Length: 208
Ligand code: PRP
Ligand code: URA
Image 1 (tube, rainbow, N blue to C red):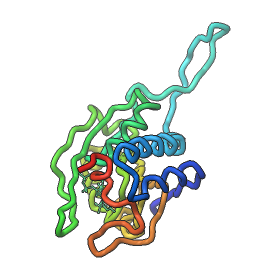
Image 2 (cartoon, helix red, strand yellow; image 1 turned 60 degrees about the vertical axis):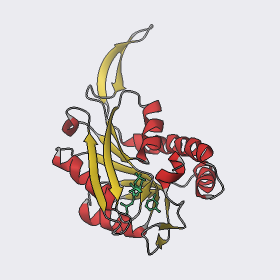
Image 3 (cartoon, rainbow, N blue to C red; image 1 turned 180 degrees about the horizontal axis):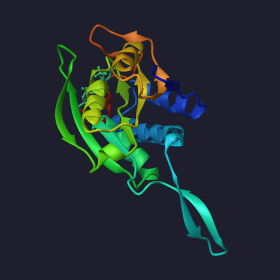
């Protein structure tokens, strides 16, 4: 059963209101998206594995917890995932960053994969897959399929706004991948856009 966590936090809600507002200009949208993802990262990174290592403080020897040598991977679904990935990488600079290019067809709304570049030995890394929008779920499912085909077992999907239709489809395809989202919205419209949503995330970030 897919575990979905809807983050409930006043500052995330405030920033989400800025992102949803159609009058928010691209520069402010981009900046707010990064800030929101940074806030969400705290919850997301609670799932990271650490290893016990011996270190010396200036005072004495001790056992401490550190990330494994093969650091976690942050995988961005292009284009819109990049703003979130940058925010996560700011607090997790050790991460390997991957990119999966997915684009929805304007008519069928089905995702098409057009690019893939992943960190080496990704199968051994904990992987955080990021995309602001989970609408029909097609892009996230295809991205998770690709990670699975590379042998990745430990995946978390982080998004900003999810539609119930996308959550259900993602659950059917990848029941073992937890979803962390800032909001679970009402439904999709006839063009498979999320309602109330925030519009086209890629266009709003990149002012296209
Ligand atoms: C958007 C968004 C997701 C996808 C979600 O990307 O960033 O990747 O749509 O929709 P889905 O759940 O129905 O697949 P888009 O395809 O518009 O590409 P872009 O980021 O290049 O604008
Ligand atoms: N992609 C977006 O950017 N927004 C939506 O509402 C649906 C898909």
